[in-house]
Image (cartoon, rainbow, N blue to C red; front, side, top):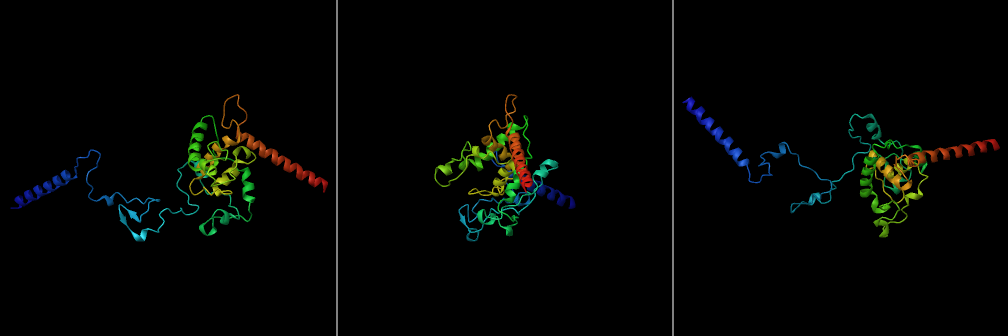
Length: 267
């Protein structure tokens, strides 16, 4: 009797398993088959820009006014691996925003932003900040190609394809006063970074949509518009824009020191 029960149990088990296997097969060769418990291994994805008030023809009133795209907590530090240079580059920015940034660019201290006691002191100090991504003959193409993609998606609509300040948004009359990069050769790389990070004039802050490595990469790409032969490592090329920028800062610093010394002597 026990043997018969065991045999029947085995048959039932085999039959049940066979039915599950057969029912999970579908005619579509691209289908993974039927999923019996998808939530056990496939968590539902929350899309940041989806209107959850209208999903698959269904209207859910309580989700209509809820914002799904939320800003990450300020100064959140994502995991960046074990490369010390990469990690150092991605640490929170040490420069403070302008004192007026809460009014001009919506950067509020209540949301974690640290504002300076001055309007432009931090911006002026940023002139001495150097780009941590050093261009070499080996990486210049990759860096500038990446910068071009970022520029095309985040900057070109206002600054124009060639950085002349006449992008589609300007041509349409929506914005005005966008500068030509050719006229901004006196700025240090750090000031260009600061302007992109916190915003400047009518341009909004980009620190929420671009990380620091992307912004520094963008600075390299923008420098092509500011300086001739930027990133050209051929033997007959002139000094790179990085060198020109450094020289410009040193010359200005020397002039300031000379003026201070002369003023001291007069006193």
